[in-house]
Length: 400
Image: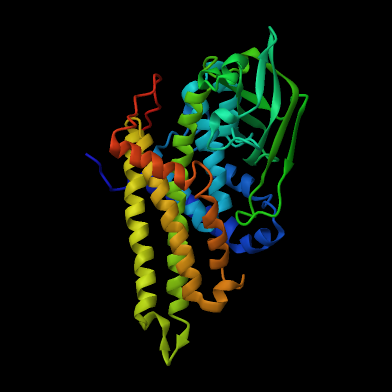
């Protein structure tokens, strides 16, 4: 039975994330958003608060918290700014949890423990200039050279590309299967930024999430040690899908933080602004927009919590996570648009935060599976065209 009551530990994580957002994000986010650069003090602050590894087991340097805690922290981070939640999504959801689940003990000790302690930053390298939703369209290759793999290719739209120390990279290890677009030829590797042949760069001019680092990673004849292969050759596609399940979960929960930020900003403004001789909180259509924000927040929260509960049991939640991500991102976009509308002309300027909320809301309907991909997934589940099988690997069961 799903229990919606938060435990003391879960509330402690929520409060910890809320404090970090209040101290290190909200006071200066407008400045960093305008300058389109990442706050250099944010990662150290998150590491000091144990937010970079809190749901990784204690034996690897984490706090051993559960998926509901991860959802709550994601919500609080995005309440501060989407760029802060992205750090949790990438460093924990797309890098650390997959390493915890799929890597051998040697790799965990070397590449998970420093990440959980916040000493090193990890990210996820799947998307390429010509490959996003079409995963088998990626062009990167990792050719077996005996004692190492020779990695070549380029990754694009990578969060934390210029900040991360470690990359979880996906590439074709079987070139014949690449020609046939057979995803069983894709493998996963851990690549260090310090390896010869690795270069990174940042992208600018983004519509939203401007205070976050997004960039590219280039691999030119990079020698990747054989022992840096994650799990087995040919299992990369399966691992990537597991990664996306975790990343989408944090995006869903984070979107609820954005909805809540839109709601709170709209409530505050509606109690200050007067039109036609009365506060706008008294106008029915303003009430309707705020009510829609609240409704979106409540049912989106229920969806990510259901997915989190399944994850806590070690059960596959691809369907539930996809639905939560799709709905929560849709509601975040709608809430941000309504928040701008509530603020009127002021919502069109950066004097108030809602214009940033509006810009930030768009990205989530594209990354971690576009809204169109999730629409098709949900239809195929209902029509019986898609049935998930349990992944042939133990999922992490975390204590609540």
